[in-house]
Length: 192
Length: 37
Image 1 (spheres, chains in turn green, purple):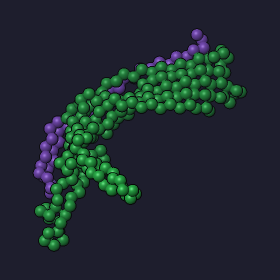
Image 2 (cartoon, helix red, strand yellow):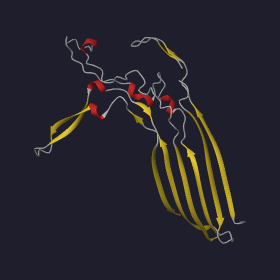
Image 3 (cartoon, helix red, strand yellow):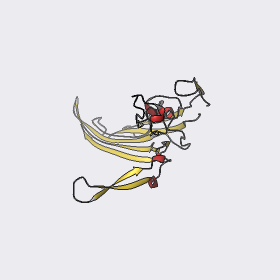
Image 4 (cartoon, chains in turn purple, red):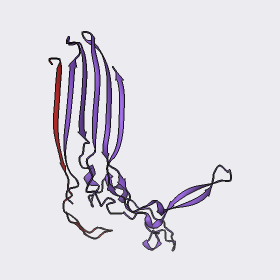
């Protein structure tokens, strides 16, 4: 598999400092910049069909029922129930989104610094961080309609029922397709 | 303008990944496997 992924990004950054009164004691500083999310092997490993690493831990185990029909205390294949992990032994990620983009962040900061006396200063700062193109996985094999509502008695004993949603057994399947375009923001005020 | 300091920057990021051809011999539970790139 090639090009999982191929990302080329250009990041522009600028910082500025201004000596407010020209005496070198009070400064307004600001910066804005685009920073790409650090990447190594994590994204690619999801699509390696042979990898047995943490990124593919879901393929490592399969829980099956066992009825010891002949009473010999040996779990024989004919006594085992159906698999509950259809991805067992295979990669759960097989379809990287060809349009997936590298996650990135915008960092902003604006500060006011003042020297009270030599060696001692006061600073106020505003920091802001915005997250873009955060990846996620979407299970294309399962739709909301694959869940069946099963009413169960409210354990509080109030006579009501609660819906528990049960996934159709035939739909216990794969997870696929990292996507993008989520956005989150973080902002903080600091006084030092 | 002697009071102003500017510090502009440009960074170019290039990141490319691939999974190469792989083979695995037959084991206790699975036959031999070959994965093309």
